[in-house]
Amino acid sequence: RFGLVPSVTRPGTAEIVNSDFTFDVFNMSVSGHLTGQLDCASGTFNAVITDASAVGTGGPPIPSVGELSGTLDRMSGRLLGTWWHGPTDRVACTGTWIAQPPP
Image (cartoon, rainbow, N blue to C red; front, side):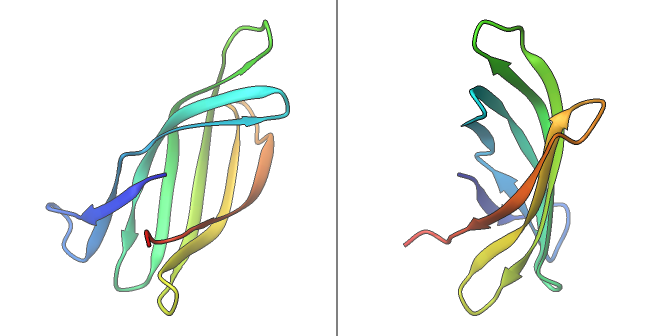
């Protein structure tokens, strides 16, 4: 879960807030931080995953990185796009995502 607020330094953009995340996949716990923005004029969203790591059962943390990109569907208010995430030396996982606006 993350939020977007108007940028103070970049007019016409919204910046990510509340961006720490954790999820489980393939018997691993992944956590990190999202940094990025939405260009309000074009509807383009870009973010990077930073300070991330993946931890398997009994194993050491594996530093990881990633990116999210997408577009704003102005009719529904949803953001949707693609993501990748993996160890710092390669892309390990890819997928799609959708962010719903709050009710």
